[in-house]
Length: 525
Image 1 (tube, rainbow, N blue to C red):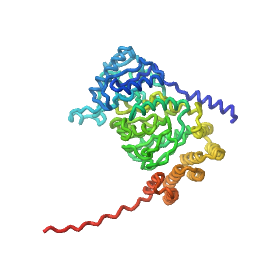
Image 2 (cartoon, rainbow, N blue to C red):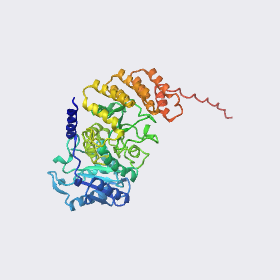
Image 3 (cartoon, helix red, strand yellow):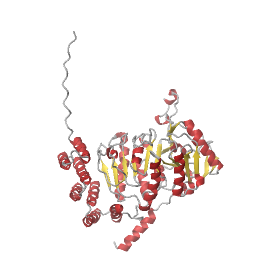
Image 4 (cartoon, helix red, strand yellow):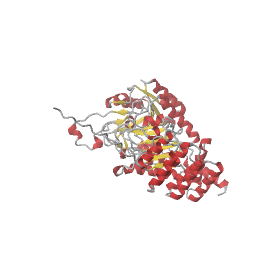
């Protein structure tokens, strides 16, 4: 392809992929007047995203994470309704069924700041009444944000979820007339003020250069009704390679192993353990700036201001810029559908649009934490500021965009780049690509090339784990054990040896310790 024609195609694809951001004048920022840092963050966010100060609303609400339904109504819902009415931000009308709701709405996005409550505790109902209800209707606990999505509609039941009319849509929220009564609701929050502020800074900075790096996916392989969760992640794997986003996918029942040597982690989607584990426990682990990282679990956001509990707090404390989670039990099908969320992000939608399009219900348990206006893949077309750390991933993306239907050409071009730049990373990415294509022979060859070229110990360990997983999937356990034993030499007592030892113990479990001999019982006289 002539260079000038290729550049024109790249420019044209940039025009096609560009998505408008959300109008700042349609954004309302909510903060807690009982938390000075909440107010400080609200005004900081308004400045960074050019949101008018008159759109900042302080609410006199309890300074804690979880509140009662009565507290939600009296300190958040009702004062906010009055504020909208007083400022003529909406026009109310009535449905045929007698519901009062907005028929005109100038504001489309609410953003809760650090310090705002995020959970509404369950309100007990009589046993004889609950026994007649479907299991999802017995709960009236909810995420504050999910309730705010429908706060303009008066007279709704508090039991169970409500359908989300934006689910699976592929258009900007503001363009759909049927969504006028509803709101998108995001949250800038975390274990502390500094983390919450970083979410804003990272989003703004990353949009200038784009989110580039490795994607790590983790299947649960639980089967049965849980299969759909793995299906979401498999779809993400497929989409990533179509878009030239190099991806490692863990197809074992275990989560990624402790001290697994991840690198340049820009994306993570995994499930299904209740507490943070694996490489995320490594004190030195950090996500790449701007990373989107999500782990699915029922109560992942139940304690989001605790950097060591559940998943959301730890993920944010490790540097992620955006995540989603659940305050209380949501049930799998009523959580964020990862495949839809990721697809919309890659298409260029804002984080809050992608998150809202991916959730089938409102008035339920779900939160989206991060700058709602963040567009992580705004530069996936190759535009933006080019940083040295991103050049590898930009070149991979360019190869896949240029020759997406020609695997041989992709392999040829990236192999040439590996030789010219003397960069083993290309061989590793090619190995992952061939593994995705089920070309085991070629994947093995590329991984061994990477092993021979890498100098860093953690990189060599990661390649050994790639090969061990490959052999494990091919039912070649002895080869898997052999490559791991070789990689372990000299690392037996080093942190980098932990994932190798863990994998060896999975493949070849050590014998149980000998039972202690029973003590002779003396007869009592």
